[in-house]
Amino acid sequence: MERNKYRRVWSLDSVFQSNSNQFINHIQELERSLDKMDGHLAATSISSKEDADYLLNLLKEIDSLKLKLSQASSFITCLLAQSPADQVASVLQGRVAKLKSKYGITLTKFQAIVANISLDIWLDAVELDELKDFQFILAEWREEGATALTSNEKAILSNLSVDGYHAWGQLYQTLMGKLEIEIQLEGKPQKYSIGQALNLRAHSNEEIRKVAHEKLEHKWSEQKESFAKVLNHIAGFRLQLYNFEGTDDVLEEPLRKNRMKKETLEAMWSVVSKNKNAFAQYLNRKASMMGDEKLQFYNFWAPVETKVKEIQYEDAIDLVKDAFRIFGNQLEAFVTTAIEEQWIEAENRSKKSAAAFCAGFPMSEESRIFMTYDGTMKGILTLAHELGHAFHNTAMNGVAGLNRQYPLCIAETASFFAEMIVLDAAIEAAVTKSEKITLLDEKLKRSVMNFMNIHSRFLFEQNFYEERKKGLVSAQRLNELMQEAISDGYRDSLDNVSVHTWLWTPHFYITDAPFYNFPYTFGYLLTYRLYEKAKEIGADFENTYIQLLRDSGKMSMEDLMLKHLNEDITTEAFWEKAMKLCVQDAELFLELTALEIV
Image (cartoon, rainbow, N blue to C red; front, side, top):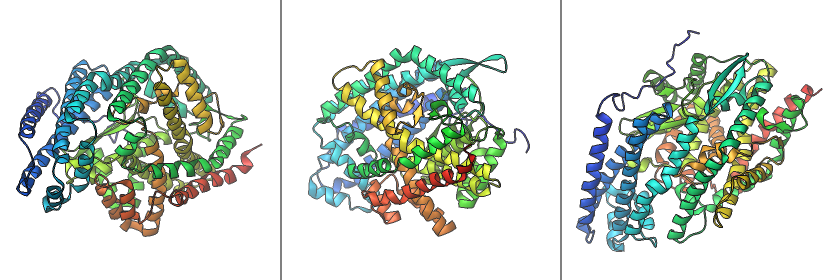
């Protein structure tokens, strides 16, 4: 394989030219557009059927503002990920945060106008051909606009959130991005970013995994008081917001944002809880294979085969492309575009952000993928995961900006689906039993992450918020809550766990998305149902899948699955079908490794 065949560093120039005023101009234009929109809204009242056309024009302006703001927000995210210490980008991030707040206020005012339309005019307006495509989101806005808070009160809260809420999330990213640890490898001390150090969890050498774990735990222990303050303030602001809105149910917002019924969430978690034994047995078997009674936390990501050859980045890209080709031509063509247009930042270097992500640029119909590629199968699957997100963005091309706001749970479906395609293709191509066990282990790690790890995060967040309602929660208590949640989530099948998981899990600090945990489990299990149907239908399924993605921003999850799968996801029966396939993976691993135990 030709080395350096594919660039590992992205280019952002097609979005905004570097070293130019293009981005500044974009921000200034957005500021002016928001001011202009405020003027329009102040003079607006929909009081007759003839005003429906004006409503459509306002909606188009809101749509345009949303696209421009998403473009700016993604660009800043990328700048700070590639260089967390970029002071210029940090200042610009502040301006974008204020614009997001201002857009939120503008949207609140528009929602109030929609909420105040009389029922007879409303029923006529939403039946207009031009507005039919926006019926779902308009209904959402009408409902939100009718809540107890006035638009003025919501505007005040939105302004406060810039410095009193979102700023804490930004501080977390800045603090985490600057942290480094030093590890001695091959007799030489080397500095690692947190992202690089976390990647060492998949190193083939157990001693290196253990040292990395211990160094990280020491770093977390040093930093825990600072990060406990950040987490407490994020949660405190959120709880105050809920009080203003007249609710104390911390799941109300995440369920609403995921357009999901509580019955769906409860059915999913019930099925997960009933089927954990198979995955606990897998973890116990892996511990036995490594000579331990219980699996060490730092060995979870370890390959079962100790002599693992590093997978070059070029080979990783080709493996992903070949797997996607089996699924469909459009997915393969998309990967080619992502590579040729330099959408991927994968270089393994220090002083870059830790978390992998995909950023969408809806105005220019592009995406950017950020990760630190480390030469492992885990790295390949992270690449596939983020490409799945980016494919979802591409599938949305041509869809109105307001209808691109799909929930996190369906976003995670697209990413896990891409992982599944790559992983299953690799398992199918495996020649030896050892290769098959190794790849099956990678697959089961994902099941454990979604059924045990994510469940532990969900349990932790639930319990933390209940305690936060009574006052500040100490760093020591956060450790205890995390320990309890991990013990419950993993059925006590891990030893030497990281009680600081609350500190280094970025999802707890995302201010736009509380409870960013259950969407992963939803997406993962749904992927199994989709993948099963894909194998049944064949190549024709790609178009069905793309249509599901295109509809994902304008339907509830229940209606989306009823339309495209003809299934009811509020029932445990739906989730059992998917879980059955996951359990079969665990049973196969146990069967294949039965003779490996001495």
